[in-house]
Image (cartoon, rainbow, N blue to C red; front, side, top):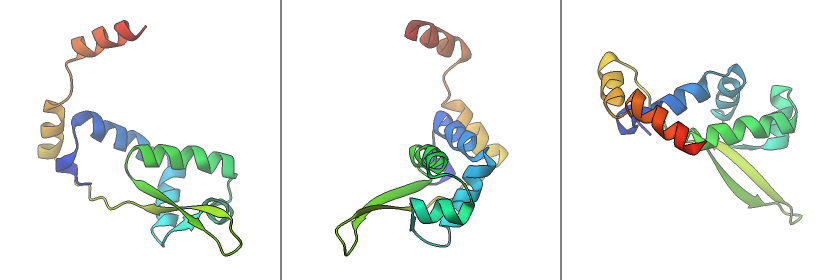
Length: 115
């Protein structure tokens, strides 16, 4: 994923995801290589449940990827790794992303229709 590939809404989603110190720490830990949830939770000193919440958010934003591997004893283990991304925020990239955002009036109408 590169900044130029993202729509305005995608960019906002990625930036909102990165606004959490926990998620930044998860990405930093995963940059050392793929690992499974229990090990990552131990390494970060947080519960597996809380880690799962952050991993789901990172995965939805396209910042991490998951794969399932079967261990020698037949146990399925889900491994997470950092997905390739290269984000460069400049006035130009923000302007390009902003052009793809729906108008505020359109967003308000869409939100009201969802209610």
